Amino acid sequence: MQRVAVLGSTGSIGTNCLEVIGSLPERLSLHGVAARSSWKLLGEQSERFAPRFAVLEDIRLKGQIPGGAFSPRTELLFGPDGVARIASDPEVDVVVSSIVGAAGLEGTWAALEAGKRVCLANKETLVVAGPLVMDLAQRRGAQVLPVDSEHSAVFQALQSGRSQEVRRIVLTASGGPFRGWTSSQLDTVTPEMALKHPNWVMGPKITIDSATLMNKALEVIEARWLFGLRADQIEVVVHPQSIVHSFVEFVDGSIMAQLSPPDMKLPIQYALTWPERLDGPAPRLDWQTAFHLDFLPPDLDTFPALGLGFEVARRGGTCGAVLNAANERAVELFLKGQLKFRDIPRACRAVLETHTFDLNPTLTDLRRLDGWAREEVTRWIS
Image 1 (cartoon, helix red, strand yellow):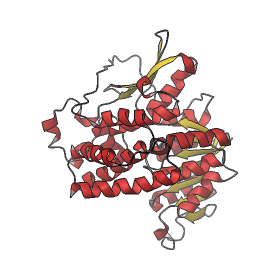
Image 2: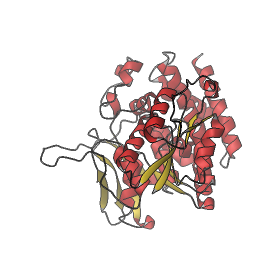
Image 3: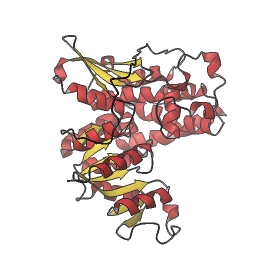
């Protein structure tokens, strides 16, 4: 029995994770859940699973939650300290890190310091502080297993060979809702248009990132640190069907890919139960129905965000923290109607080029640059 804490349990990854846990009661139990401010859904999760702890990170909600909203068997905590507490709780075996954005770093860090298995759905953790995070995991004897469908696919395919036998990995991208559009067409994009992803149901931030291809840029950076690769060993191909989730090419020319319907329950379950595979709730491919698979090169001129990902993966240092923070702020402004769609990567490029680069930053340096980059994007639009 693995006791699980889910950080970000009310988001898309979190709710899928709870479906997996609920389907495998003989193997998985829910010990803690955490959310930013969605107390009603968090309360419903508490009533269903009766975890030991539930955390609302927004401390302003303390004293405002009506009685009976949470199971009497669940202790309700507030603030970032509550997230750190359940992430490091000695009774927790596995921590699912799915809090959106750079905010997810703190809980992940606490879990790794405590030597936990971390099922990482928060790609920003490795984008911001990849070398520091992986070094901490090694020193503490912790595990970092990917939950993103692309990185899970790579992780699974890598088990067909040894690390020194890998020539390259190829991450697949759906292309988002604007695949094949021209630059002039992208000038007309509104937040409502960008939030309509053709294949995946995700939160608003990651959906916008998928539309700009910034999500794939962040995945390139994440893969660099997660798998210990050089930047030139990582490629991206557009695959509109989202059936092949990524593949690995070995030095002998063999290519291993992982295929499944576009549903997050499979990679979540694999991270939770690895190295075992169990029957679970994920949908299956129907091999009795004809379908085809397309692979196209990405359009780096029309979608320049992806090029930023390769550049940051090559440079390392402070670049990941700056790019991630600038993008988070730019997406926020776009969703508010204060920034145009094509200006998201432009703002990120401008902030990245003006920051003071440091090859070996501390965690304190990265936190400082996170705030600086957000302020710079705000100034950039004015």
